[in-house]
Length: 360
Image (cartoon, rainbow, N blue to C red):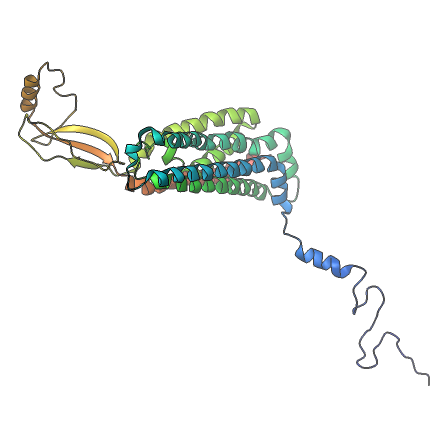
């Protein structure tokens, strides 16, 4: 009886011991290096995320690059300001006594805030309006709808990636600007914290405003389906939104009223002191019965005696000031931002519901 011996079997354990290309004990030519390369390769975008990024990469990179440049400029300006403050002897010496010495740094704030307040408008017009309007206008949306990817996934990826870029940029700019302004925030009253230059550029407000402008522009683009028309209408929408926000924002705070001690009618009125960084809304005379009179009361008299007589007749015994302290700034910003975020969420929801029929 003949004996057959398998040349590819190990005599000790009977396991396969193939040694040619593709064997178990040794890799193919360069297979080990290829595996190592694949393992160490950095993760890359793929699928729909890669497609959306590639389609809008020029706009996304422009936003991120502009953010980096602006941040670098603000860091430089803060360093310059801190050098001046240290040399000046701040905070032992009041900034009000610096007079014109601090003017260059106030000018630096003004130049930067001019650009920061325009960011929601710029992003809404140049990023939001063309986001879907361009695809609807040139037929890309129909091509996407014909593929295996659902319209909802395509829309979600577009909105999510755009929202992420906008959020990263605005959060970074807001944080750095607040860091720059913070050393003098409570010590220099000429920088009004309720102005759009400071209220709209710190905290969550710039993020909320930018997202609402961008997604509002997206909705306008879906409705009009023409890029240029959507950009023009979005410009009007964002400007109107900022104007409405500026009119509405002070109502987010709780008004504090300070009243002076009552005096005899006709006496010299001394108004109460308020925090130097407080935003004064109104000042009035107060009568003995608590009725408020405008400061123009009795100003049409021709003599001091006549003015005193007029004040006595009106029974004016003191003065009051309505103001909002700077301590409410953060709560006002978050309250207002929550309203803006809710409006943005409503727009996004509407895009998914109504946009199913329009994204083709």
